[in-house]
Amino acid sequence: MDYVSIRVSTLRGDQKIDFNAYIKINEKMVLYLRRGDSFEGDRLKRLKEKKLRKMFILTDEENSYRSYLQKNIETAYDDSSNKDIQTRAEIIQGSQQSNTEEVFENPENVESYNYAKDAAGKYVNFIMSNASALGSVMNIENADKNIAHHGVTVATLSIALAQKLGINDPKKTQLLTLGALLHDYGHHNTTLNLSQPLDAMSPEDKALWIKHPTEGAARVQDKKHFDQTVINIIAQHEETINGAGPKGLREKDQDPLSILVSSANAMDRLITFEGVPKAEAAKKMMIDHVGKHPLQHIQFLNEILKGL
Image 1 (cartoon, one colour):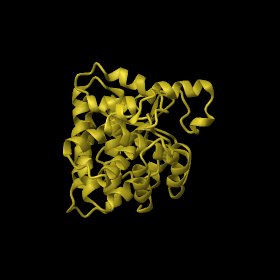
Image 2 (tube, rainbow, N blue to C red):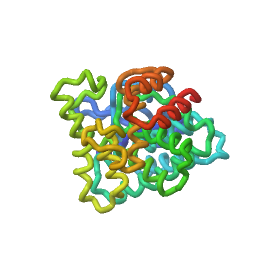
Image 3 (cartoon, rainbow, N blue to C red):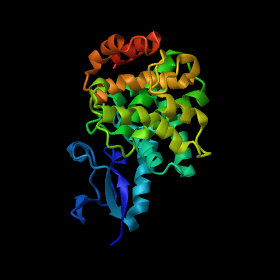
Image 4 (cartoon, rainbow, N blue to C red):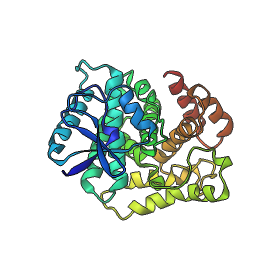
């Protein structure tokens, strides 16, 4: 039998699957979830705890899987559906994470990039037009410290911050979101342990960290389908307004949307990779990052986290 891989990040919600899902153990395919069951509850949690990124389905069931995805996403974005906001948020968050992973793995694929770009615009509308959406997405724990999941969280915080700043132009918010989703492309397939404070990194780890924005941007600079704003965000997301970032750029030399993503990224680095509770992250950022990010950004991020 022939199998094709599917992303675990796409398996969200309470919708029953109409295909069999397998995991690979010692080169053998083992049935994990039968047709007619769903991935809600502990089943998905166990997969994430094992840091399993992909499962497998039979090739002749690929159309059933794609129908499952489409139905899930359409239901999640439908404000009139009977799904609760948490279920909808989990489906949409998983979809955004999957889109990010797809571009990370296939940056040369124009169709994947454009799909992620279109979906980023829809995600902006979901977060901005649903009062409970922000908190529902932020409640989804990034248990395995996945950089694509981190990208979704940074995108979510960036959208909320842009809304606070009065940035509502659809083109800008779409590119802001796409750039935030893809900002850590330089960490894709990295050997660096990201779950440590920057000041605790060894010289070797710090060197890898310093290079990742420039290397990530360099990998896609020749891809004509990549928007320059997105490339700027990848290249500049670790920069600070006082010039203390890897490239030494000051505020006047940075893309304005990169500055916004940098603030959101610094906040989620504390939460996701350094284990700082959300309730304490803003205070720690105010103390440790003062002068590195616009004070208004830190204040607004504090308000955003308090409202979760």
